[in-house]
Image 1 (cartoon, helix red, strand yellow):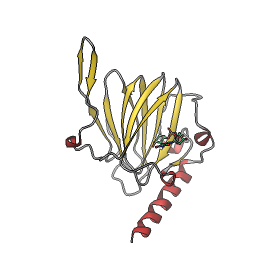
Image 2 (tube, protein in one colour; image 1 turned 60 degrees about the vertical axis):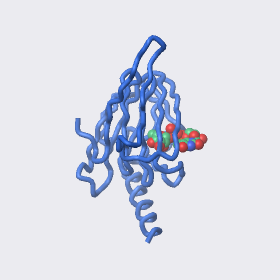
Image 3 (tube, rainbow, N blue to C red; image 1 turned 90 degrees about the vertical axis):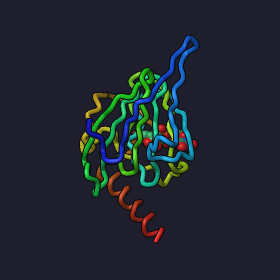
Image 4 (tube, rainbow, N blue to C red; image 1 turned 90 degrees about the horizontal axis):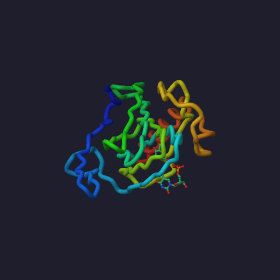
Length: 180
Ligand SMILES: Cc1cn([C@H]2C[C@H](O)[C@@H](COP(=O)(O)OP(=O)(O)O[C@H]3O[C@@H](C)C(=O)[C@@H](O)[C@H]3O)O2)c(=O)[nH]c1=O
């Protein structure tokens, strides 16, 4: 499966015994492309959809611990070799994988069943870095296979993918010039 440039999916090894099981979900030495500063734990009820969001600053590193996470990715970076590439991948708690999403790759999470997600970020949560759009805007190129998901108020009133891209580029430029 082709992923947007810089995204990775890593298979994790689960060690089972009579008590249950244990899975290492992150080691710095794996070179996963992130040095986390914050970890979040998220529970979602069935048919919740979070996103679509894109970040200018931070990368996300996520593992579905229980249930199913359908991860949707859409590359909005104008300079990316995979610009416009969009795909969906099912990550399962029963066979854990870790996904890395770099800045500029718009993403959404759909949970078809009650699910738990653990994710870390490369930079502390900052509302400036929370840019989003309507999850079902056709311009994202995503084949969600979802109807009428549960959304947050913010995601329900989000604008178009074109507006999200404009905002992403404006914030990126603002941060670049602010650094100079
Ligand atoms: C993301 C985040 C939220 N919050 C708070 C804000 C709010 O009160 C509550 C729920 O936040 P949100 O509605 O923004 O959560 P959510 O819609 O799940 O936001 C997440 O969506 C996925 C798709 C991502 O890409 C994440 O980076 C993040 O944007 O938690 C924090 O305190 N720290 C955090 O790191």
